[in-house]
Every structure is written in structure tokens, then in C-alpha cells.
Image 1 (cartoon, rainbow, N blue to C red):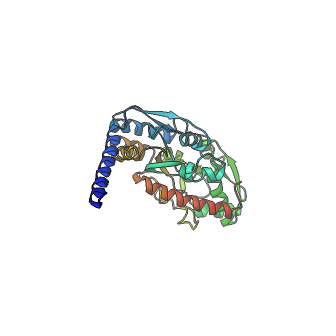
Image 2 (cartoon, rainbow, N blue to C red):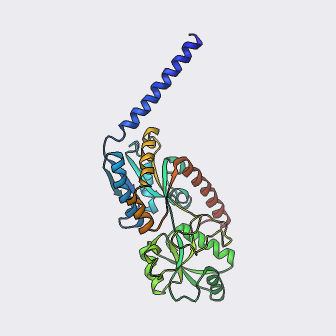
Image 3 (cartoon, rainbow, N blue to C red):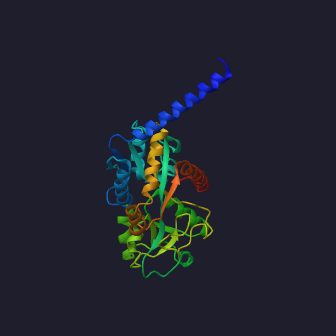
Length: 318
């Protein structure tokens, strides 16, 4: 076969392939989709996800059903997604720590490479918080108080935030009395009543932004919190940790690229939708972003290495 003929054949084949992708994208979706949320109904991820599902449904032309599959900090939902063959008709809307830290804390059937990442749409706003009337008003004062009063109590919710506070205690040469709690609903009464001195909040503090009942001491995001700009980040305080989270949409690895592209387009449109912006930025006080899938994966990969180093430095997890 002549080179010119081969070249023409290659062009034709490429055109057919591109045409096939375009047809796949145009055809997707042809039936309702399922958004899986790995947390119970009523939490901030669920509240936000339900609005996102409605907006996505309008852009995709198909209903997006919300399915709650709580367990293992979102790990149950991801374990099921890793085995899905649904080609993007089922996807998870979840938090990045389930991917970055979850497999390091306990054996899982998934890891970073088990999924394709469609896009990140929100930056988490976790924080270290306290209550009113404490004998300290900022982080430096808390550390000084803890040094003079061993046994200052800390409300923990996750293995990750326990690792962070253990690291901080080691750096500062202080000891804290650890009080395990079951999520924000378990933490809030202890902080508000004064039974516990300070604690971790994944977002519960946003409900007390106006009243000032739950002052924020430290931002656990990469930057200062949108609603609490006076609280310094961990790095600003001298701790070399970046536990910032991204709320991200993930699909099974067998999902065609055309389907991923279509979902990403709908997600980008959703981040500009007033309903999604309102629920995210005004109600749960988290910034709306749009981060492309490959950039999300690269950021998560870097965070995994950081957590590995931290765990090694701390001699493992408690």
C-alpha cells in the first residue's frame, strides 16, 4: 500500500473514531443516573449533593437519583463504585479524604487509581473550633493554656483529625485528653456546653457563624476559611500539613472518556448555577470551584504522599 493511501486511511480512521466519540457523547445519558453519597442524609455533603443532583439532571436531560450509602467515612460507597460497570451512570459525590487518607488508615478494596475523576466542585472548610467563655481566644493562647493545664480536652471525629492533633501535640510538647465523638452532631453539644475545650469540625461550625457560639481557632483548609478569615491555617502556625479537602465527582474506571467529558461539562455548568452557589456558599459556607479531573488526581496524589510521611513520622496511627 502506498504511503499516501496509508495516510488517507489513517485520516479516515481517525475521523471515524472521533465521530464515534461524538456520537457516544451525544447519546450519553440515555437513562437516569445515580449519585451515590457515602454519608447519612442531612449532613452537608448530602444537602449539597441533592441540589447538585437536581441541577445536573437539568443539564444532562435525565433524572439524577441520590442514593445514600454511609459507612467507613464514605469508604463503603467507593468500594462499591470501584466494582461498578455502570460506565458513568453511577457516580460518587464525596470528599477527597476518603481517597487520600482512608486507604492509609485501614485496608480498602480501592485506591487512587481505582477511579476516574470527573471534577472537583467545592473546597472543604474543616476547622478546629472551641466554645464561648474559654480561657483562651486564639490558638497561641490555647497552646499556652494547655502547657499550664495538662489534660485540656479535644473532641475528635475521625482518624485523620486525631493524627493531626497528635502531631500538633508532639510539636508543641503538650498533652490533650482525647474525647471520641460521633460526627458533628456528637461534637457540637460537648463544645457548646463547655464539657470539652476544643475539637474538630468538618463543617458543623458553619451553623454557628452568626451567633459566635463556636469560634474557629484554626483553618484546616489550604487557605483561610471563607466565612472565618481571621483563623490562621496550619502552615501559617508552623505545622507542615495540608489536610485541605475537595468535594469531587468520581466514576468507575471503565467509564468512556466521552461520558466523563459530558459529566464534566454539566458539573462546570452547575458551578455557575445560582442554586448550587447558594446552597454551597451561603448555607454550608464553602467556596464553589471547578477543578478538572486530572488536576484533582494530581493534587490527591501529592496529599497521599504527605500523609504517608506524617504517619511514618508519628510511628503509625493510634
